[in-house]
Image (tube, rainbow, N blue to C red):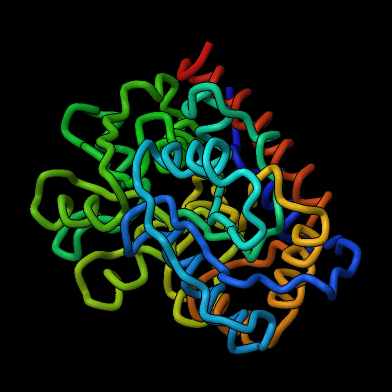
Length: 329
């Protein structure tokens, strides 16, 4: 059975849908804070820091946004912290992504559901990549997948999400699209973040890496890795134009990791509407468009109720895929 995990995500990204909440000019966060549910250097950390800086540069918030790294449980520690201890905070937002939706879909945050928080908006979509060490003899995605077909035990692929997480699913999507029927034979090794996964690749402990283009870019620029496939429907522009897509190599695999924010479920309507509006203004700014282009982010413009519906659909879609490959029952 063929499956593409992010068909709905890509459609929304290409349509550039948007919905703005009612204006809430009266609310300004006194001590704006963003929780990045991982260690420094990953995608969630990037989302908090770049958005916080741009919000202040644009005058959309009056004070510097404090970024708090709260790693653990693939985002589960941060989610539980918000639900159980910070539920009524009006100054707090939390970085989220397709990885968040994946863990919610698979019940990886015990006792927690997406309805316990309020979903603010998206700030773009980060396409997945499959890469190898610069010194690797492998130069194309079909070469790597042929090795897996011939003997799955000879290829280990590292990623920064747990087994069954979004990085893992992206590899399975590519393997399935290439005709590897039993995708459970693909060896995936989970590490605590993309940086650690790349470190293991460079050490020779694994043969390939799967992650998002924003976290891979620095390692490409430093000459440590080479991207053999971008999981986008067509080639990206700018600094990413030389990176081949899986699709142009005959592997019909697309994986878009949306990036955005949620807020405490008990946040006041005035505060929620204000955050929704400010994220919408940020997304529409020339400054954020430049940040997106520099970091390989694709369009995905959703706020408020439209984003809430989008996340709900994502959770349902990923749950269906996870059942197909036996990760959940």
